[in-house]
Amino acid sequence: MKIETRAVHAGRHIDPATGAVTPPIHLSTTFERAADGEYPRGYSYSREDNPNRRALEECLAALEGGRQALCFSSGLAVANALVQGLEPGDHIVAPDDVYWGLRKVIGEVFGKWGLETSYVDLTDIDSFHAALRPATRLVWVETPSNPLMKITDLPAIAALSRGAGPNIVTVCDGTFATPVLQRPLDCGIDMVVHSTTKYLGGHSDVVGGALITRNDNYLFERARKSQRYGGSVPSPFDCWLTRRGIDTLPWRVRAHSDNAMRVAQFLEAHQAVEAVHYPGLPSHPAHKTAARQMSAFGGMLSFQVRGTRDTAMKVAARCQLFLRATSLGGAHSLIEHRASIEGPNTRTPQNLLRCSIGLEHTDDLIADLDQALVG
Ligand SMILES: Cc1ncc(COP(=O)(O)O)c(C=O)c1O
Image: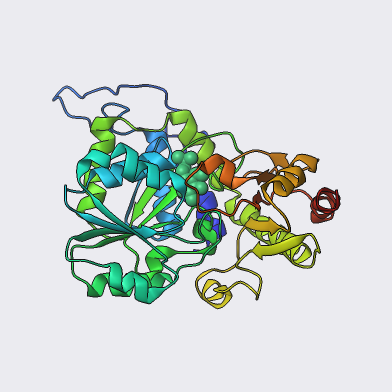
């Protein structure tokens, strides 16, 4: 079945009690036991499992072509659960421009855990290969990356990791691409992570995360335990909202991608712009890799203005339609000075603005950016 069909049907069941086509929200925290003490309907307590969560998990597994999925209370809750599954002394390889929250999880939450981490430019496959060690257990990829829109060659990372031994689990954060544009599991990656807060929810009204696995592996099982006994579960309503958002995911993501391509082309030709980072542009250093592993290039882009941090802040301040806010993947276009949010140790250029291109008409978006850039 094609993804548009899976997005509408996967994990949706007619409610057996009422025939409702739209699923009810199961707020009950607890479920009845049968006389023999068993749970014949498969649910006992909502921290462990819940019908809305299970429906969303079925849907996400179907979208990614995975075996199983787990839904969490946020994207970073997934990262916490995965890192928690590692042993002291284990080694992680992660991108040097990884989403800054993962650095915080590894360094600040698990700083005492005794983990070793190499932050590497994963677009350089030789550097990646050289970074692998006998103790490497987790390879974390994020493509496209946030906010520099770097592209990592997923089949190459999967093959090199497999070749380095059976103990390495590869994980791709596919938040920017969504399963509509990129299917990491088909490229040989073991697990996919999403912040469902973004395109999957799609309306900037629900925080969530998901982990989808292609195979049975110990880190997935440890993440499940960490969730069950740590409690980082999404509410039934959050799952319901996210599942509803997914109905329109393929159509939204293609519209975001078309809009972003037009905005990127406009920015690339603008005199006030020094550089545009968008994998759909032939000038992007990994455009060919992106074209191989993505069906379109997504709704996220970043650009560097000609000038300083102050120039960039002024451009953002002059925007009328683009909202100055963090996050991404909703209907509204957003603009953000990333270095400010990432803090003093950021590697993000100070003259960079990141945009989540929304679903408005591109003529209006381009007119807004033009007046903001011209000043
Ligand atoms: C690429 C990426 N991964 C993970 C996260 C974390 O997700 P959440 O905010 O749902 O915890 C974000 C949030 O911005 C992100 O952009």
